[in-house]
Each structure stands twice: as structure tokens, then as C-alpha cells.
Length: 215
Image (cartoon, rainbow, N blue to C red):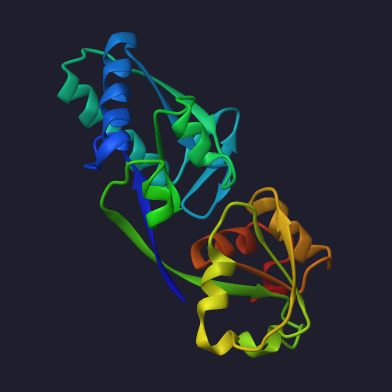
């Protein structure tokens, strides 16, 4: 179950209102000398170390884009502020200007292109399934009648439903407020499976108390 993950960049080419918004964002950054980068706290490729420190592939990519923007705008210095985001609020906070740029596991689709400008593809990911090792779940078909959790604002379950191996399946769907909350539901038995990007699942399993209990 593959999907494309892209970074929302204010320098991306887009049409109509979105393109105008991108130019407005650049003008705002130039006049203020500061920029707000949207970051993740519990994603596979972007997470926090605590004490306001954010790291990971997507965080570093966002920081590099900002260095290019600084150079492009001719700024001698650029103050970077970090704003934690969730899958649910990332697009609205880019839209209303709370965040100037978000670099994360954000799928580029036609609906979102109406609301935000997207950069080129940076990462192609598979939507996968995390379960307890003793769950008996070996494939998509084994999800029939089960409770699955995914994170609010993500497209993973949509991808699952489009998969031909999911035809005829019925399952209960519950939502976590962020990826850590979704994994907690799996960890505490409130869900039988966690559907999400493979890298996000792997990261949450690796940080759990008993990683060997999951697959």
C-alpha cells in the first residue's frame, strides 16, 4: 500500500490562491526576519528529544529549505521558531499562517493541493500494519472484525480501503490524536492493529518498552 510523502514548501509552484499565499509567506518572512517551522513530536522521520529540541530527516530537510529561503531573500540572519503539529492540524495551521512551512509525512493529494502548496516528492512510503506478535494477524484479510487505530487527519485507512485485498472487510476504526496516542491504543489492547506509514510504525515500536512484542 504505497503513498507519496511530500514536504509543504512555500517555494513550491502552485496555481491560483495557493501560489499567492506562498508569495505572501515569503514577503512575511523577509519583513519579519523570522520563520515558523512546523515539526512533529512522534513521527518516524521527525520527532522531539525533549526540551524544545526537534530532530529527524524531515526536521533537517525543513531547516535546509529555510537556509535556502534565507539566501534567496538576501537575509543576513533568520530566526527559526519551531511549532509542534499533529496530522489533524498541520494543514489548517499552514493555511492560517501560524506555521510558515511544514516538512513532514504529509501526503500530496488533489484535495490538499487546494489548501497548500507542495514541493516535490521527498519520500515514497508504504502504509503497513503493526500488531502484537501474538495477535494472529498475518495479512489484511485478518483485519476482518478487528479494531484498527490510525491517527486523526491521516490518509492511511483510505489507502487500506482502496486495496483490493480489503474488499468485503468490516472493522471498527478508532482514532488517536497523534502517532504516539495511536500506538498507545495498540499497546494497551484498545486496538488490534495500528495502520500507518511503515517508518512511523517502526519508530514507535522501537521506542516501546517491549519492542519484541510487536511486528
